[in-house]
Image (tube, rainbow, N blue to C red; front, side, top):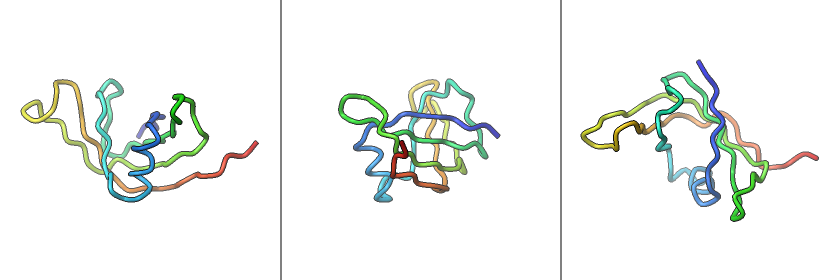
Length: 88
């Protein structure tokens, strides 16, 4: 099991919070596997990290070149933790 830190834009972060985006589409440059953990770091409009994160498990991995660009995967899983406040 690996933990992967990923940056996502604010619109995707909010869709994830609202429960309408249960997946991540990623280049499989990290060797994602079922059981891994994704820590999604929100980026603001200036592409800077806001300090807000969503942590989710990887319970399903879809990797099929008939449906996805070569080298890409779709990952889905359960949200484990949400951090919305930034501590200074």
